Image (cartoon, rainbow, N blue to C red):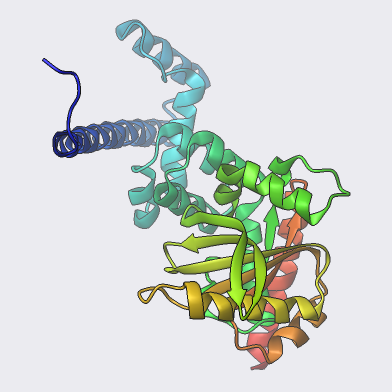
Length: 335
């Protein structure tokens, strides 16, 4: 009997593989929900016993030993983890929207998200983890990079300084590219090559709805060739995303070049079912007043963003977020 299969058979077999993989994924999610529900119920039980002053640290330690003796070889029931179950229950008690999210994530993810300072921050990382199916390492990288604070800052910044455009909702005004391992002094070619060589991590920073199309992407206008630094597509926006890399400060003429690229993409590259292309100018520095002036008369969906080669100080981000939020609130009151 031949080991070779034809294309028709392979397609049929792959259909069965898809059924198996979907069943395995459903089984894993069901088991995980039950595990999280068990931790929740234990946390609720311990919380009530502690509140009633029946239990203290010594009792919880004895409880831990009792369980481990009863179920030899079982993991996850150390005294420290039982206290985490109690904290888990008390953190999300009465918050139905968040409770539905925590059951969709593994315990390790929940342990990393639980210490967040606000429910808004917890909801942000819970939702993002469920949507993008982050691994534990990917989640930690996003949290260490201050993704929540950077996203909130970007949202407030766009409302205060730039014209809101629904086509730009998938983009932020700052990105952290520490994984490129570039020196502070680097060329635009160095930056582009490093991004292409680290596409998986780059897309993690930008969002998993982005798909790589090409670098130095050629567009022909008249008898001349022009090259876009990076071209992506975005599933959520259903459009092409052109990215221009600038190692210096943003200059108004950068926007004119981007508008030219977007026009070329929309006329010659964009498919009929796609939305108009959007652009991102990624630079090392920008003056917000210059950006505001440059964007004030522009009709093209484009955003100017900064990139950093080092993880930000989260305390500085939190301070900036408070300041900008207060400014936004003040402007709303005046309006």
